[in-house]
Each structure stands twice: as C-alpha cells, then as structure tokens.
Image (cartoon, rainbow over all chains, first blue to last red; front, side, top):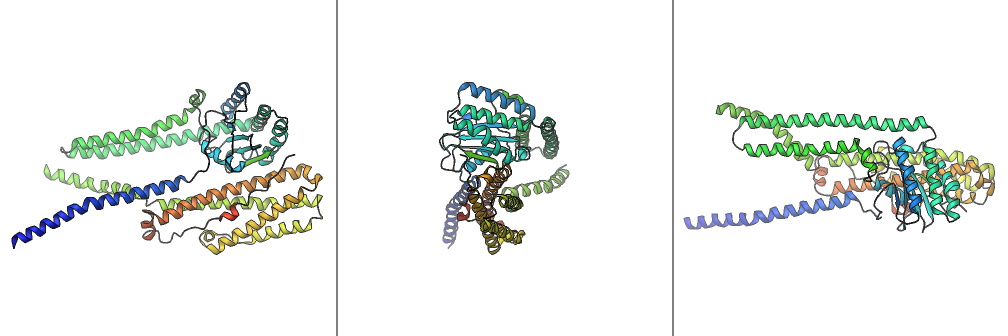
Amino acid sequence: MSGRVVGRAWGRGGFAGALAPAAVARAWLAVALAMALLAAFSTGARAYTFPPLTGRVVDAANILDPVSRAELEARLVAQEEKASDQVVVATVPSLEGGAVEDYANELFRAWGIGQAGKNNGVLLLVAPNERKVRIEVGYGLEGILTDAVASTIIRNAIVPAFKAGDMPDGILKGTDAIIEILNLDPEEARARARAEAEETSLEDWLGVIVLILMIALWIYIFWRAARSGSGGRGARMAGRRKRSGEAAAPVTTWDWGSGGGSDRDSGGWSGGGGSSGGGGASGSW
Amino acid sequence: MGGSFAARLSGLRAPLFAVMVSLLLAGCGINVIPTSEEHAKAMWSEVLNQYQRRSDLIPNLVETVKGYASQERDVLTSVIEARAKATSINVDASTITDPEKFKQFQAAQSELGRALGRLIAVSEAYPDLKSSQNFLALQSQIEGTENRIAVARRDYIRAVQAYNTELKTFPGVLWAATLYRSYKPMETFTISEEQTRAPQVRFN
C-alpha cells in the first residue's frame, strides 16, 4: 500500500522532472524563433549591396584618375570644415536593376551622409553603365539646393561633359557647382555649422547629466543594499561593476560624437548619420 | 540588529521591485506597439505632406503649359479635375485603418499621378514650352515631388509592415490581445501603384 504510494510519487516526480527541461527548451526555442523573425522583419529586406563608404569619394566604377580624385577629396574636406556639410561623390558599376532615384536614396541612408541633427548631406551618384546621374539632397539642404537647382546643375554642368566623354570633368564641374550653391550665402553657411555644433553640445551635456544622476542612483541603491547585508556581498559588488561598465559605453559615444573632427581627417571618415527624403534631381546622357 | 536589517531590506524591496518590473515589462516589448504605431503615423503624415506639395505645384504647371499649348485642353482639364477630386477626399486619422477610405485615397492620388504623367508627356511635343526656364523649373519640382512621394510611401510601407507584424507576432500579439485592443492593423499601398514611377525626363 505504502509502496504503491511511494511508487506513484516517484513516478510523478520523474514525469515532472522529465517534462520540465523539455518544456523550458521548447519555450526558449519559441522565444528564439520569435526574436529571429522580428529581427528579420525589423531590418527589412534590402535589395541592394552597396560599396563601402571608404571616403568622401567612392569610385567603385573606376572612372576617376588619381589626380581628380585627390582634387575632389580636397574640395569636399574644405566644405565640411567650413559649413559641416558632407558632400559625397560615388560612382557605381551597376544600379542592380533599380531606378537611380531609389538606389541613390537607399545609398544615402545606408551611408548616413550629413550630420545627424542637420541632415546636411549631398550625394552625387554616377552610374556610367546605365548612363544615369543623380544629385540626392539631405532634408536639411533641400531649401538651398532645391530640385530645380540640382536639375540645372545636372543639365548645364554635368551632362555636357559626360556627353563629351569626359567623366572626371563632369564630376568635378558638378561638385564645384554644388559647393558653390551651398556657399552662396556665406553667413548662412556659417550659421549652419554653428547651429549644428551648439545643438549637439547641449544634447550631450543633458545626456551626461542624466547619466551621472542614474549612476548615482544605482550606486546609492547598491550602497544601501551592501551596507544593510553582509551576505552575498560579492554578487552585489559584481552588480555595481556591471553598472559602471554599462555606463562607460554612452560616454565613449559622446566623445566620438563631439570630437569627430580630428577623426574624419585621419582617414577614418564616416557619415554623420544624416538622412534624405528623396530631394534632388536626376538625369541621363 | 537583525530587526533593523529586515526593516531596511523590506524598505529597499519596493523600489527594487518597481525597477525590476518596469525593466521586465520594457524587455517584453510593452512599448513596442505604441512606439511603432507612432512611427507609422509619422510616416503617414510625411506621405500626406508630399501629396499636398504635389497638389500645390499643379496650378502653376497648368498655367505654364496653357501659355504654350492651350490646344491640349483635354489633358489640362483631366489634370485639373483629378486634382480637384484628390483634394476633395477628406483624410483623417481613421483613413489608415479603414480599407475602404484608404482605397479611395489611393485611387484618387494615382489618377492624379497618371494625369500629370500625360501632361508631362504631351509637353514633349512643344519645343518652346520644353525650353522655357519656368517649365524646366516646374518640371524638376514635379519630378522631385514624385520622387519624394515614392520615398515617403516606401518608408510608410516599411513602418506599417513593422507595426502590423508586431500586432501579429509574439510577444506583441499578447499585448495586442490585452492592453492594446484598440490598436488596429494599418492599410498600406498596393504593389500595382508602387510601380507607377515618376515621369521620366530625357536630356538630349
């Protein structure tokens, strides 16, 4: 009688023991699958494979000679130093079947041309094999480099040289025209650079203050916890170390964000995180 | 001593619990549905913004074309009528969750797009018009706007896809069934209209 009870109890325990890990594993599998699914959807299926952003001039189609490439680069660096505008020249061997407008917009966003808060980027995209050219303008410069102006630059500066077969000349002339338009009102260009610097520094300081307050709060909480109990102290200290480790990451981002100037000049240049809503103009020859 | 330790610990327990619960809930995606809904709505207002911009450009374009090609009355009237129809459709917050209203909006806008495309196409036959600075500027603005519409629509489609997916997949589906019952899936543009691209221009 008692043996049967014990046997049943054991059986139940054994059953539960066997079930629990399997159920947990299944739950984890479901969670992992859901995560993977969500991740797949959130990144979206990007149709294009873009060349890496190696500098302000990305000549993936190989149509520029080293001299004009260096000249272009120098002008683009000067413009960014002057007005913080990021102008990027890109040539691609193929548009991968997409429209030049679509490709240019996706490329602009993938590279994040222009400063993050200002969106003051311009992309001059040339696809020599499709015979297409586009000037894609970031949100922040749409008022200065309007569609009509971009279209005029393509018609009058770029396309004539391309038709004559001189690709580097067309790109140089187009870039000069873009930079000229951006500097039409020098006071405005300076204000653009200033506004950008002030905005980020204010945001940075707010972020740092919030960060310090949060760290102080956590330290206080754990200090109280550590003071009140002697057991499990090691675990609490580990917790505190972990917090300060987490806190270090935003500070580095902040340093990178405001001190980016010297970084950009040393070749490790990257887009500032700007975006475009499809402003600009395109043409073909 | 032991009593004060217990008292301290219980005093600490409440704030720690609150922090833990809020972190846990945020980790479970309690914020994802409202956040992605707001994002999709913002993308929708950008779509409306760009359609409005196109609508604003049309009277000027029609006047310019009239000056050179007044005999193209049919095309001109069809553009004016399509614009009137598109602007007469009342768009509010419920448009994006109401399939019928959304279809109506989409049909009117694509009709306007087609009429505009025809207008640009017939303009090719008038060399004086084609070389007028005013027309060139307007044409580039129309093209730019068509392209902005395409970009805004693409962004909206992606935002809605993320939002609708969140409503239907784990763990969002749990929140949708409990806390967020009033959140409805949004309508999105169909592929057939997505293919009607900006009118192409040739420089030759």
